[in-house]
Image (cartoon, rainbow, N blue to C red; front, side):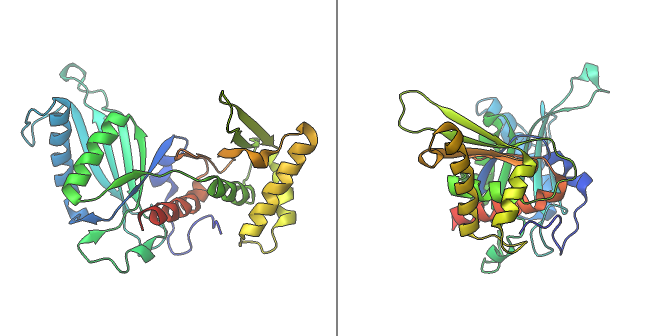
Length: 296
């Protein structure tokens, strides 16, 4: 279910390395109307002027004038699951260095990445004026996310929604990522549960040695490369019963809120961190599916 790289498309790890080991907030995005990847430099200029105007509380700014914030919009052909997928689009906001520091680099303050990994089936029935990039990943301050989001919504008639991850999907991630082969790993698989209906917040952290988790999954999984809901349920039930035997706590009565493995970590609030480049496409395929299911 998680091929190391998609069979149809060989990505260059260097070009997607910017995604690794950063915290990304997930959004789903409805199809963009009238978007063209041939006009990315033009979009960058317009977004730059819009950002400056927003930061100056609505005072108009001429397009093309040197601004404090530099906006770049570029495509990433390597970030897709097949040749039928749209190229991913990367939007970056940087603070320009002052004139006295002309040789110093601009400081990157915000990144947003629109992508569609193995989600080409969504584009099949779309009118040709629409571009489908349903998954949007954000790293940076919420203020910039709001500015960029409102510009895209006004310009391309699309709608952004935070993408939460349900406990059911988190349990699938725990099972799938446990089954992935990682060359060297010292990090334990960690599951975090939240206890409901208490007057104070209580989180329970459950760490499992990666080799033990993999051995358990290997006994549960019937067909390598395929996963069923029944297998995921059995895997989680085994972990729950082991925990209950030692601590007399029923984890089935709590809510799974976070999964951390050597492949990636994911939180129910829709926050993810990618840790392995060779499984990046697989994780993004799953997130693309979640984004598509939210907008359909």
